[in-house]
Length: 89
Image 1 (spheres, rainbow, N blue to C red):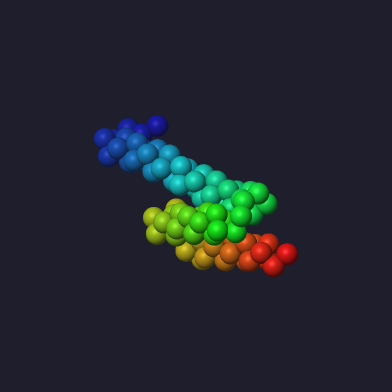
Image 2: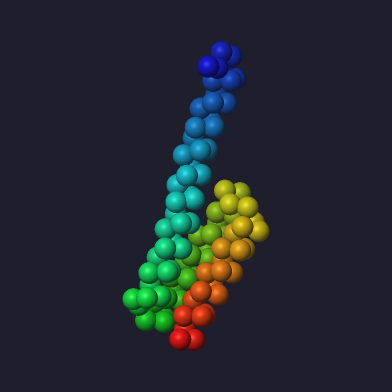
């Protein structure tokens, strides 16, 4: 366990960051699931709203460096591709 004052502070900061990052990561996962569900159930205009919201959420996570920028780009790209393929059917 931490002994020095600075070590204790650093440990507390790490816990705070960990909790914040968990929340952001789970938000990213939830918006992706929302888009997948909405493709099956909702009309095209609502799906596009959900997609736009998901892209913004993923981009914000990347900007906060919770998700790597290339991983975020990959997620956004795959989500857009999924929506576009579903429209073609």
